[in-house]
Amino acid sequence: MSDTILDVQDLNVYYGKSHALKGISLSIDRGEIYGVIGPNGAGKTTMLNAIAGFVDYEGTITYDGRDLATVSSERIVRDGLIYCTEDRDLFPFFSVHENLLMGAQFRDDRDAVRADLEMVYDLFPRLDERREQEAGTMSGGEQQMLAVGRALMSDPDLLMLDEPTLGLAPVIIEDIGDALETLRETEDLTILLAEQNSTFALGHAERLSLIETGEIELTGTADEFHDNEYVREAYVGVH
Image (tube, rainbow, N blue to C red; front, side, top):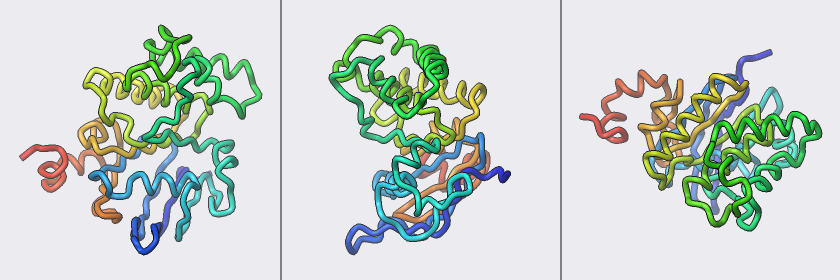
């Protein structure tokens, strides 16, 4: 079996006459955290939406050896490709516990679901403390933890996270980062991380791509990104 879980080749997306993605290509290995950085509007979310089957595209997206052009969005989820969107998409009047259970709606093994519930509560103790609280009454940081937790309840093989640190306080960003590192060490999970917060992405991803104006301008390891003068000056603020 190939070590590649996701392969994107020559991906193009159009919104009317606007060419939003221009020949994007990247390949992600099983078990790695892969970062995609770039400014707001660069095309990061559009790329994730295309992979998830939410927008039409030209090119080829292969997940676990299957061409996703022939697979429905529901089937993509059932096959373990889970998308945690920037909007979080929580059910605001449902409790924390109910939202987490919604993430497991396609799973039949109830013992595994119970085990994953405890895993999520261990990963995010704040959620454990607020099991019965309505999601809509929680802080932005707590809602982000819940969104990630609900995505994990779907038992992903590949988890796509869109701007998980956007607008969050530094202490919550640290909690999210700690969770990613725990998942890397304890779960058989691949993560595709799209982030404006380049410092966060560089701190957790093994490899990264930089997207600007719908095109990949640079791909390399985290060390190569740290050593790149343009990345350091434009995205990390190091001169």
